[in-house]
Image (cartoon, rainbow over all chains, first blue to last red; front, side, top):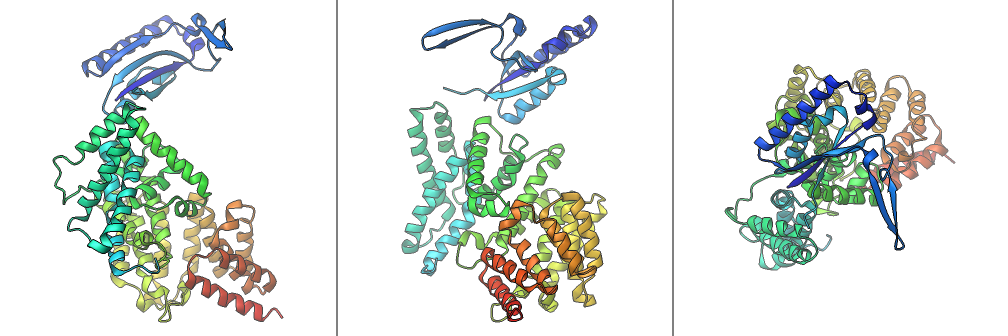
Length: 115
Length: 416
């Protein structure tokens, strides 16, 4: 089964992280990504620019509105994702636990809806 | 089943014994509990229509499995037009028969039980889910055991099954480190099954009659799997103690005999001895818990067969500990009874009245039975009469109902 591990965290808090610690976090993510690749479970992954770079589009009654900013203001924001292919939820949860993002925010594990 | 023929009953029994095993097997192979249940429901209907006239087949499980598979394949084909995921189900249903000895369906009930107890499932629905899938209880019976409304319970069960399927919860035995987190729900479910089988309403529901034995059997299986878990041993001991008194709970006329009036010579000594051994081993492991305390209460009751008396002070101490641990209203009721035996009925009633504001008590029979008894002892007959009326209304077992009616008649005699 494929699962998306959606990495959520507080963008504002991330802004004030000292440079040294940031290097540490990035290294942890690189090691994690490599572990996923080595285990041959990684389908795809991306880091997202912060919600300050988000633009939201919505069409109501044929009228399209474009708004600057994210869809909703939340305490934690989606900062990136991993798409993995593993046998079951337990395997997905084990990978989620190892994700560095779990220490700074939370990882939402969602199965892919096969159409 | 009042007009059931012996053939019909044999068919029902064979079907019931296979239910949990077949749900577990089909659900584990497909990941879809609801589809397994639906398929089996059809298979059972066909069996009950066929077997009484043609006889129970030589390999009943294989027969049921084949019928359930046919139905599941039909359903998956129909769904296929809407969802590609049905392809996976179709494939796994078809695979479910390959390479399997048709007369020996593997017993995966424990895997099913631990899938239902998965941390990704809402904690409140784990126990009920186990009861429905492993033991085949209906939502109304489960709702009663968990003091919930049937409609709400059935909705929660449907949602939980969909969640197992959609999130891909695996059907496997947990590893050592995962056990404690999943064990609570499993033990709670086994105990609830035992409780639901306890009144043994004869002839009403064939599936419920054997529940007591199935709960004890599940307890043995889990204890075999986890011999170092004191609460597992405690639960098994608790069930053995209570089960040991089964023969003494009815007299020759089939009337209900309350614990205090039971002839202890009728208790099953071998079962009590086994329970004592289990409880001792549990306490030697040094981790106290709810089921060990409950079993200890039963151990005090069982001691009457030797000492001829019941040590209510010891029982009160145990219920104090239990109440602190569980905050359960059921424990609070039993503690109130122990209070009335040690300090006096007035104190017992006062403790019971603290529960009166809990909305779950309105339809909870043991609350009204205890209340009626304490009010009667205190000579408050009008209120006792009303409480008996409520207890009788809520009691499903006819023998117990008859007993309560006699108690009520005694109170009414003194009313005039």
